[in-house]
Image 1 (spheres, each protein chain N blue to C red):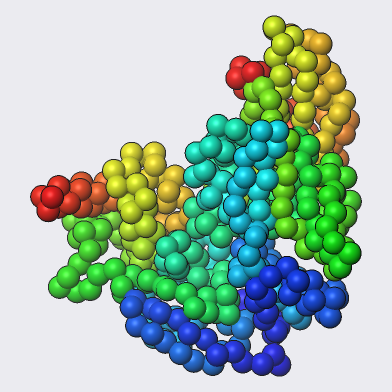
Image 2: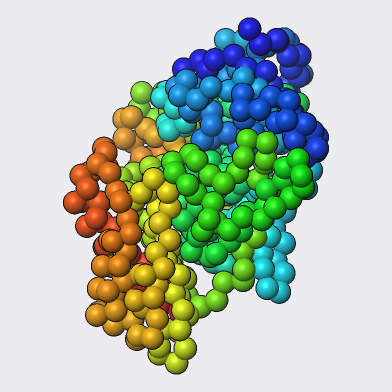
Length: 284
Length: 164
């Protein structure tokens, strides 16, 4: 389990990160907590010649809760998300999801930035960010740009981030209504067999908006506009739930692996999504 | 071959300085370079928690950290938690309540539990099970591990109250 040799860099600021990325191109990788990247390096499934450790870069930590949005620095860890009292009130779905990621040791190290930037379809935060309509701040040689989470993921490990950019923050519009993050996994620390993020608004007994995304059921997270639309205007009764699940099943594209065959994954996706919608609606 | 780095660590209160390749995993630094063999290598894939140490106040699986990342860090291993003749209350409790069978996972269990009790001095059983979820016991002796941590918490809280 010894990874291949690399040169290690620990720049102090974003300018230093960008200079290293410009110099070394795709032979360089940016690392935050390292708990996705280091296992891949140990297995020699990824080739890193220049490792750029972000731990000393200023300005990438901190959770700012504004009146209309929440900004989370890329280096905020899952443990910090869980422990932040005001965030738990403003956007409780983040805490609910983070508690279901990995285990305590990994949550001390794993960051929101790494989780969303890596592009691993098994990671929980990308689907959640699509549900919440978050945007990602990318810093590059020409300055900063914002990319919507719903536009960011192109294929497994392929995202809208270019090799010379680094993801510095996540911005989430203030969520409204009820929430649920429901995850089916085989054991602690496992990726989801199926997971669903739901944020739903109840206006006098009628659903006025619903955002739904699922995790690890395709090579990217799956934001299903149709599944949300199936609930809007309904009282989230059984017919609406069936319609939302049917719409989602059209949008996912699971593959067979050691978590089960395709038919089982579709079954699990339906069960998990139904639970998530029911729980979110009960809180809306 | 990547060039070696000058690394400085503080391990169990002692300053250490050496040259190492950045790719060296911290568990190997501890065990093979510094002869600190309390942290164990179980799975080496960040699942089992046998290699858990405390780094700058966080429980970390030292098989999933490069020594280069730890440069400048303050590290505590099981050796820094207690010693023969001066056992930590967790070590006493694991002994009294059969919190270990083969003992392989125990250094990681106790190092993690010590941090957990710092954060939650009187945890419920559920909080213990959730907070210890990153440590696996191949003997499956979880019931007595939970009992041991509960007993240590009670003992430590009583000692704190007595001191006040």
